Length: 82
Image (cartoon, rainbow, N blue to C red; front, side, top):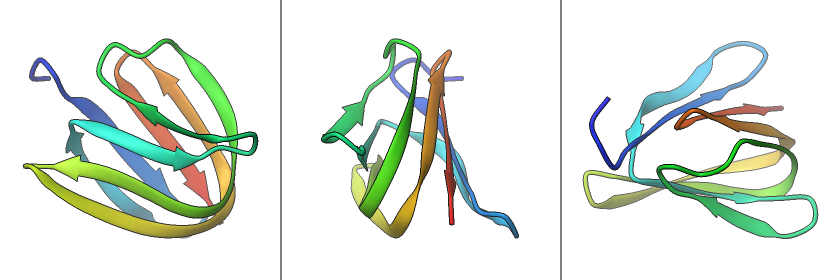
């Protein structure tokens, strides 16, 4: 993996919605929105309605979600959504 990137995987019960390397990820946490950058501490968080937003090749991409959860570990973010 390149320095300064995070592996992002967004999955739903039926399919993978996104998989790739990104520079940051923003999510609607159940308590407050938060962002993950390379080197972030491990965490697990519930997600609420809103948008997952990530930056890839300098461009912002968004995905609307209706809740789910996220795990951050070893520069990898896995998001499970409904």
